[in-house]
Image 1 (cartoon, rainbow, N blue to C red):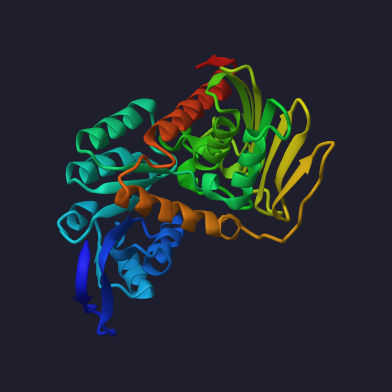
Image 2: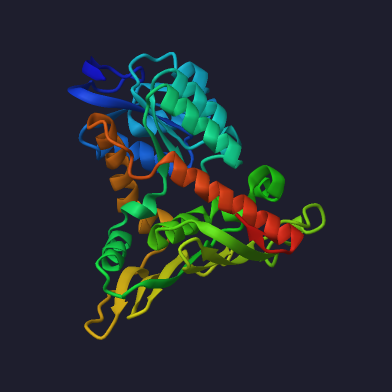
Length: 356
């Protein structure tokens, strides 16, 4: 923890460091990384932002200046030499997650790791093992579990307002064209990992069960420059699944749709249905013999749609450290999502049903 005062090395005013605040370092100064960084710099009462890391030193420096903090690093190894830091938020490319998380855990520091957790189930298991060995917290970045609308819908399910759950359908369609590094599925795990990990976790959360079988179909409809060199790349995916408890699931994912950030969940029960989200916002509509309710605010992007969820996720991470309790979203949750991602990619490439 950091106590006392710290003066920035950029000639700015002194920053009062309140006693007993957890010092957090964010690794990755991209879009998601900066959401976490701003939260810890300004909005998480029991924490403060101590440093940022980015392999591009200029990006790290610019982020530190924007956040008005003194310390920035161009590698995790350098950051780990900073004894002030208590916890790290890992928002680096997925292929580096395992080595980064292991290094942090071995240093005895707590970790919030953004999704996707890793490239393979085996990497996830190793991350979980090392964190347990060194008795550090490992929380996964499925921020939708902290979104007020999603929690409202989960409470409706848990209280039996739609009877027994029969089917969960989760859709995420992003407006932006995928970046070229995603084209090689074997190196990126593709859109199922980068975009639809949230849908996979949502389906597990609302069914309360694990995927048992799945069949996925993918296609490239919006990225013609990738077709020749990367024929297995897909920017559109549909997945049908069965769960161990007998429930059913459907996933619908797309990138480059252009029209909006479109995230929706439908939960069908034996006595009703819940519709969550629309292109206009994260409304919740319960359809049953008793009631129907909903509202429709306009939302432009995932950063706006889930802004509060990211903040609640970051606060929950600090709370689990201070209260020494299990994180709300664990390494097991991250591992199971990666397992489904890899099974889905096998199903797409081999054109067959996969049993998990």
